[in-house]
Image 1 (cartoon, rainbow over the protein chains, first blue to last red):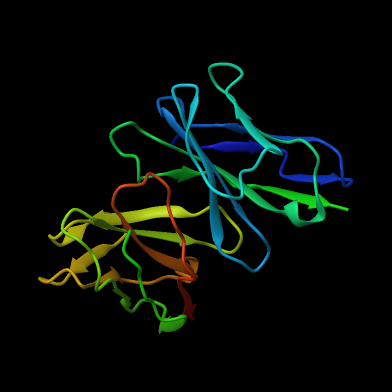
Image 2: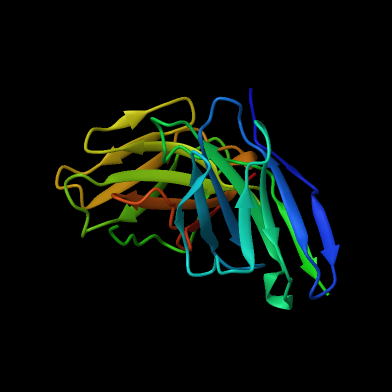
Length: 114
Length: 109
């Protein structure tokens, strides 16, 4: 069964450093998403992406964040200058064009900012 | 998108049916009810969705009341692996999923 993969599984970085989280969505999916979950809190939407453009973004997704589909398979989330409060589990998800709400999530990347 | 209310926790015995309720009294006519679950710290997993008819798939059944103000997710024969947080999400115009606190289901051996 096809699945969304994410790398790395755990990333430790120092405050102020840039990080790139990587995702490989399911191959025939055209919508891509990033969510995050701070430890013990709710899963929060960050951004959705379609046709090489951001479709929607939340208030959390400020200028420190960016997304990119650098090639036909990868989807990345970049945080330019990490803050302690960026420590969270980051989930990538993807969905088919006709099934936008059936989102398939990856296993997540645990980001720890020290 | 309509707000949902779910009990914070429930438990059931392994092998028995787990019935998870969700209240969405402000749902409008074109909004769907979606159910996801999150096992431990894994990524959320899609379970099932419906508009007004009852739905069944290999994972679960979804019963939506006639007035659509509430729904129940049924796991017919719960196993230990079904222990998870279950989220009821009402979706209308936006493509994003808005997760609440969900119901923490504990399946007891």
